[in-house]
Figure 1 (cartoon, helix red, strand yellow):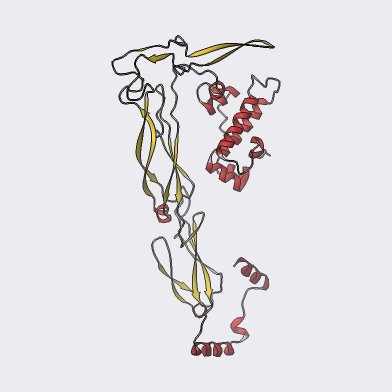
Figure 2: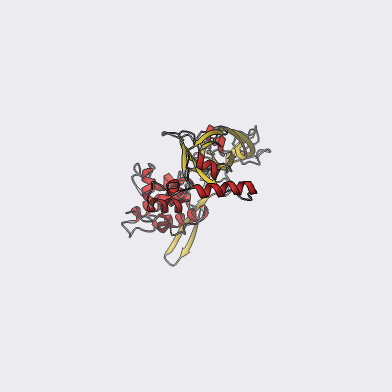
Length: 376
């Protein structure tokens, strides 16, 4: 049985994203082979921590895990993405990009290599009806983009890019420190060229030599029918621009579905409550019931009891993927009349006096009655 992911990372169940990330980075440092060579199980421990981080850093997977545990993740098709990794170094490269452990925790990186741009996450609110039918939403946000003046190289047009005078083109600086164990050589990225080994002789006037500018973007996002509150949509390539020829990041739009006062959502089903006057519940008749397409008349059988449910098949939310359309479950709330007139009271008194045991007898047993009463 796999260990609890929160226990693996050593974080409480209400930990925020920053705490989870910080804890995982700490564990990754501890389990790196260079500092943990004495432990033959270090790689397996890291895989366990990486699996926990992969789940808890993803809002949808974390919600599934919190509700249903490991079984819920397996049912939803989740499996740790370690099959293609041959070593712990491959794992670090997959989680932290080019350069693996060293790039993630302040060491050297491959000079001049492409770096993928960062992702952008934001929220967009829609109504329940829009969630049922699908819609389009326009979102606006700020993102880094390649400078149009220098086309990303950071140099004023027409001026050269020269070898960095500080690191002499190496892209990194080394410092020797004396310790009780001897001399220690520390390597760090050059803070002048950022590891590229080259600098602009005359920085671009538009981006101050950064090669990037910040611009507002507007993107129209298609929201599929059947989407639920908290689910996210990935728009590939609409995040921050990459560096060194790297691809841009992605845009993640978290969909927030506004509450609808008519319905409560239960998966793909919708639940609504309708008030029915006691005489109508006894006699049976037609009442208006809300649906996503407006009110429709629904027949109430004679003798309908409080808390009974009438199901409108296929009137709920459409499935996001495969599956069937949900239903609308109509819960009947029998309303007892108040503030009666004298004539109404007389009529009810006559009715009460005319009732016999046969009128009140029910087919269900005592246990079924108790279950229905407690469920209401």
